[in-house]
Length: 366
Image (cartoon, rainbow, N blue to C red; front, side, top):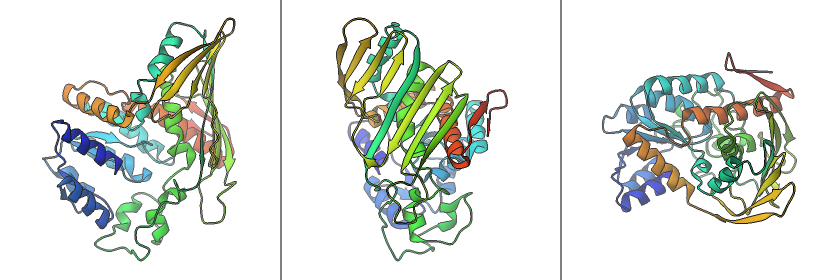
């Protein structure tokens, strides 16, 4: 996996790390990763978490398993790098429990919103901090892709079936107990039981830097629209088109749009009452080629951008915080704020309702 390659790359560069072991519900994938890392394997992730040799875990399982595994990990005394989303759109109570327990136990958790380690955003932050655009009031951004390869994942073995090399019950976790199919196991991103489509898979990358830059917490209101408008010839359940609008108590709106039927990009924009900031050549997981400041009065200014390896930076920040017990750049509280927005939008979309957030009770209301 990408994370394993990143960790092994750090080890090769002298980072004092060792990959102890690998756990996966699919045996061939588990053994291949263990061979690559020269590590041992476990029969289940419970065995991995019980291993006293393990100090830190990376959770890169299907979305629905993230928060149950992360919760068990912090209770076992491990620090956690947890891929985004922090949990499935149906698991809000469990996500909130994980957030509160992480703070209580003092564990270090880095949520995999690697855009928060993107040094390119510092240029944007400086313009906002100086007040160049006045008070930020509106953000507009999108994620555009042509293709369904993100959801229609490759099937490693069309003849696979549950047994010693395929833990179907382990894969399901707290999902509805349905009969095994190779599609559900290998191409799980197609199904609402395990994923959410663009909202929970792609939009965390898009929303993360704006929440960070603008110091936002949880939205007060969310609406969403979309559907399966292009890739509709098979049993796909998650949308391929998704649009959401978030209102924040700070008197600011964020609008995010996505289509998987066209990859023509638009420049993300932060609009204030005194000017606008746009980013060119955006890659939310990475950086951008340039930043443009357009004042309400006066001449525009173009600032050269940068495109760093944000996953590597995110991992280095996490490991630094494991050693120092500092707060990582995408800690559990920040991850919770991102997750609240995604869950609100997903529930608004599925129920065709407006979602609001009760900050006192920390509850989503439809």
